[in-house]
Image 1: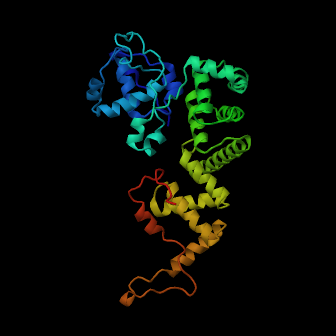
Image 2: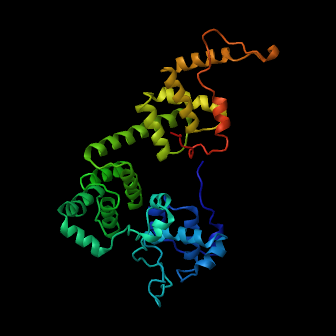
Image 3: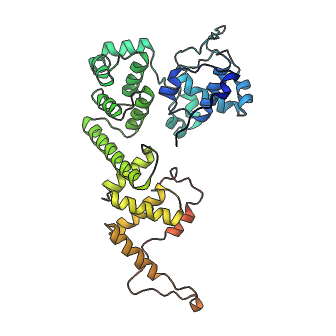
Length: 353
């Protein structure tokens, strides 16, 4: 069903939002970050007190500061306390170098005392730092001046240069791997630097630090997308791409369990029958048990289900005695799994290992 904006409220007034907010940053922006930016833009870019912003949005001051950091890192919002007397021009939100912050995973894993004692790394390099790095590294010079413009089919300005340099210096991707990442993003129809940075962060966490690993990662991502497209066709799912967690499940089901779309779809139907909802965590439990039991086809899964149902105790048996068919027993207890995951969001739950 198509949707459109009701223009009736336009007569009450409108305000400008930079194109890059919708075209580059919207996908990764948190809800509170977006609310804070819209509230600031509505006031014409004037200098605002964070306490006033927190009060207007009904959120703690600390959460507002965290929400604004997203826009500071992307140069859309600046802090005035670094230079007393600096005024924000009323017609726009100025860009400046972001305040250095630690990566989210560092903040989660490092003790508070260590964070306070250690200097925070600067994620996005300055123009001077970019020039210095290009002067000392022919590989980076080749990447930023030749290969990246060719892959992205556009001139690489400061945003692109800082992002690509950050992929190398901060996330550890070698210069020869980054063009492969860019080509993957282009093939996926995603050319924004925000998307490129998000993929680069994921590759850095996975230690994709060689051409061979990058090739394997791209093949896995394409295969996950192919499985997702087939699952969408069979089930009517609307999302065009799987989430990172869903992609991990799809890769494991195919690579580790050896299952194709037929078994994945069978697990989807089993999940829908037992829970009435779409849950990759529940589907994983079904497929995991099928794999352990040696079930390889939907027909074998149906036969196993029939055997498991026949092996259940008859209702009303005297003394609670269980009647079980000889040599047959349920291979898994999905009802117990459903109870154990009742309060856990489907796609947030991770398998304990």
